[in-house]
Image 1 (cartoon, rainbow, N blue to C red):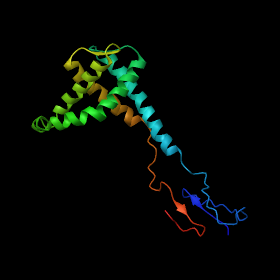
Image 2 (image 1 turned 90 degrees about the horizontal axis):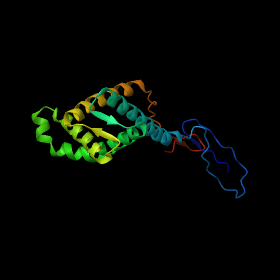
Image 3 (image 1 turned 120 degrees about the vertical axis):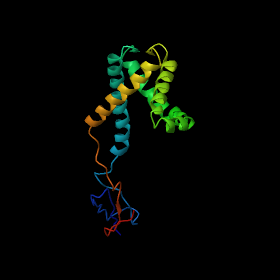
Image 4 (image 1 turned 60 degrees about the horizontal axis):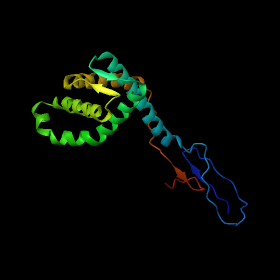
Length: 174
């Protein structure tokens, strides 16, 4: 019995009819098996990290109350801000819901400034912010620069059909 198996929508078929065991073997053969989807996620993170680091350098250049010692520290600031935005920011947003509702969402800028001051406190020497108002201005400028970078980057097309598996008759299995 010959086995045919296709993956990825390309309908690539393996016609290996003479196997050693004589049983039907299933093969995944396609030039369109995308390891790039995982690599794309990793590359997107790295590219966004470096774009955020460039934004940190630009914002520190524009604002006199924010100081970054070099691009290496800017990468550390970008990575630390990403970690703090994932871990600490949801907790701060939850705790400040009444103030956020009362100020119609403007209090979220204060939360962003607190996140930046926390990054300043954690990193210490390589990144410094002179005060709360500089941190608030830095968060506004940083978000503006990041939004420009987001518009300039090319997005990978969304694929609805992540993987399609077909049997030997061409019927879709998964």
